[in-house]
Structure formats: structure tokens, C-alpha cells
Image (cartoon, rainbow, N blue to C red; front, side, top):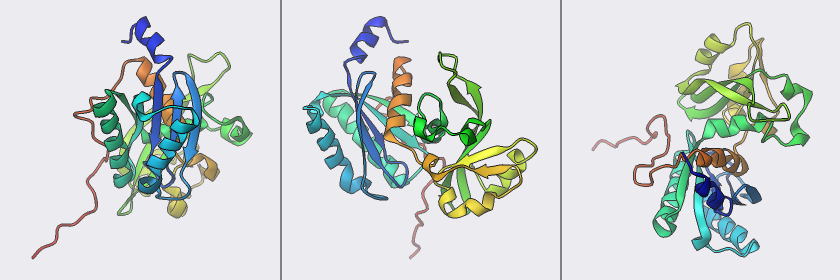
Length: 258
């Protein structure tokens, strides 16, 4: 566990949060418990081209330098193989150059947090989302399969304002739409979010299944920061030497035969 001295030091730490697991990437800069700014990339799959200019732009905006970054929080997967490698490589580079501490945050949890009381934008908090009791996050894993996690709504014990959070009842899994519906498409309704719905929403059509608005589907570096900070407070830092993305399965690359 972190000591009180560690917490005091953390309050002034410069934190970089990176989200490159999905189609729309972003980075965020924070100082301790204060989120300074978030920068979204200009379009889908612009991670390689825009991540470094975005970081430099945020640092210059707040008169900071790369050497000032003390902690790096990354979305660890599952998700885009290329995007996850970009984030992990960046985090390891800061660990090597700055001795920066790394926090790895589960990507499906980051997306589920779009409906958390503590992270959800109040402009998006509608009656439709407030009535959600069970939630599935769905990402496209190709080959007719999806990365899926399922959550039940639960009160946040740390909240004084009746905020909610999500308790994961199905850990990150690789399955097809039929398998999800057979397990969770019964009497209790379930809401769906995630980039896997962009092209395959119809595969999940069922009487007790409802797809929430697309504004809830995507991970953000702001959520990476908020969730990463809670892990950092518990001392749950990753080992930069052994840190690897959570792919859940190997890439689609095929070996050519000669």
C-alpha cells in the first residue's frame, strides 16, 4: 500500500494518460488529482501520426517538458494490436528515461466507466442510462468474434452523491454474439456499448437487449487517467520490464509457406 508520504508526492505528480486501444485515440495530461486537459486525435487510426505532437502540444500548453512526466497511465487492452503496442512502448520509454511509474488500465473497464456516476459527463446522464442495471462492452476481435466483458451496476461505496460504478461479472472474454446472448440475453435486460457495434450491431438484436447511444461506445484518455489514479493510490504500478498488452489472443498475421 502507498504511504501518506507517497500520496503527498502524488498530488504534485505530472501524469500522462494514453488511450490508443481503439479507432479514436487521445492523450490527457494531469497534475495529481487535477485533470489539466485532454487532446483527441483528428480522425480514426491516427495514433502513430498524432500521439507525439499531441503530447508535445499539451506539455507546451502548461509549460511542462517530457522530463517532468512522473507517471504514465495506459489503456492496456484488449483492442487494436498496433495501438496497444504504441501505448506500451511509449510508457516503457518514459520509465527508462524518467523512471516514470506505469499504471495499466483495462480497456473494457475504461469504456464501461462512460456510464459511471463519477466519470460520466452530466450532459450525457439521461434517464435511459440511469435505468441500466447490466452492461456489456463489446469490441471487434475479427473472425466473427468479439472481446466482451459484462458488468452489473453497483453503488459506489466511496461516493457521497449516490454515484454508481460497475462490478465485472464476466471477465474479459473472447466469444461470438450467440454465446453472449445465450448467457445474458434472458429475462434480465442488458445494455450494449463499444466499438464492436459499429458494424455488427444487428448480430446482438434480441428482445431484452438494447444498444445505447454511440457517444458511450469509445474509450477516452480522461477515463484512463481517472481509473489509473485510483490504481496508483493503491500502489498498483506495472513492472516496465514485464509489461505487455492484454491481447487476449494472437494477431491475425499468417505465416507464408514457401
